[in-house]
Amino acid sequence: MREALEALRRTLGDTHLNTLAGINNLGGLLKTQGKLSEAEALYREALEGSRRTLGEIHSFTLTCTNNLAILLKGQGKLNEAEPLYRDT
Image (cartoon, rainbow, N blue to C red; front, side, top):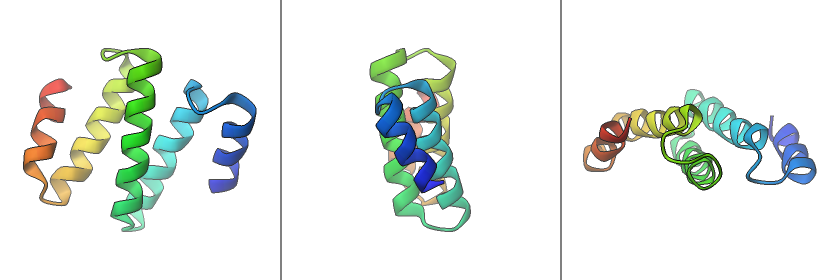
């Protein structure tokens, strides 16, 4: 998955929807593996890229927002998760 993401970055750029989806998906895989800090960094990258590229109310942006909120809640970072949940 990392190799595929790097290929997306090289061919499409960091802000293309397919690249952002790859970033988000790798974050989900890492979350499942218990690599929460790596997952959080990728979820944040996907969210910021999506906000810049697609806007605040695009469905993919909201998916990224929700994914990060769920991760933060699971880590006990409720003060960070709450505004994200409110955004979604």
